[in-house]
Every structure is written in structure tokens, then in C-alpha cells.
Length: 150
Image 1 (tube, rainbow, N blue to C red):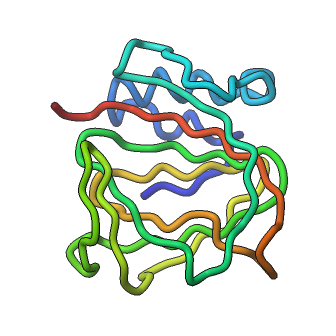
Image 2 (tube, rainbow, N blue to C red; image 1 turned 180 degrees about the vertical axis):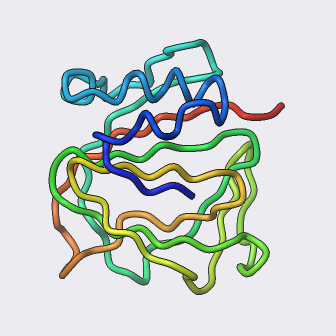
């Protein structure tokens, strides 16, 4: 997991070639204009989608992870809490394609605000849409999906 400020994104170049390409898109202009439909940036190796969401009751949240893709999560408006745990510490409840759903306890929590980003690797299960104060808090998130394995 990486939690960083957009102003420091250059520190994370060189980890993976597709991550480098995604970091190039982490600009205020691109994030503002990101599409709400899946947009391929490098075929299925790198794509992006913007979501306008609301937080949900905590008991409706769940962990998810992926084995083929890592995610870059960028909140551009509002705030969102994200819980992180290693999948081995959770109970698998669903598996479909590259989506793995889990229940269990968080090992860490991150607050995403405009100006920072979160990179979750395949070993990072993440629980999204957690309210800061109460369910129904609006926020906008841009998600980059980066293929790291077949």
C-alpha cells in the first residue's frame, strides 16, 4: 500500500511500467475531466473510471482485493475512509473474475482527501465507502486499474 500526496507522485516512478503511465495521469486537469465510463488508457493494462458516490452504513461495507490488478484511488471531492487488511487475515465470501470479497477486521485505516492518493496492491484488501461521520456523505473518486499480472 502507498498513501501519498499528488505533489510527491514522482517518488513512486519505477515500481512498475504501467504504474508509471498511471502516475502521469495524476494531474488536476485529467482528474477533473476523467470519464464516468471506463476509459482505456493502455488497453486492459491501464484504465480509469470516475465515480460520484456516497458513503454507506459501515455494516454494508466489505473488503475487496484483486490478483491481476492494482488500484490507484484518488478522492477529488469530499472525503472517504478506506480500511486495509491482508487477505489472509480475512474470510473470503465471494470470488468472481478478478474480484475477491471478504469480511473481517481492518489492520489500518486511511482517510482520502483531495490532494492525496492510495495505491492498493494485490496483497492489500481494501474496504471502501466508509463514512467519516455518517452514511450519505457525498464524494468523488477516480480509480485507475493497472494490470500487474496475468
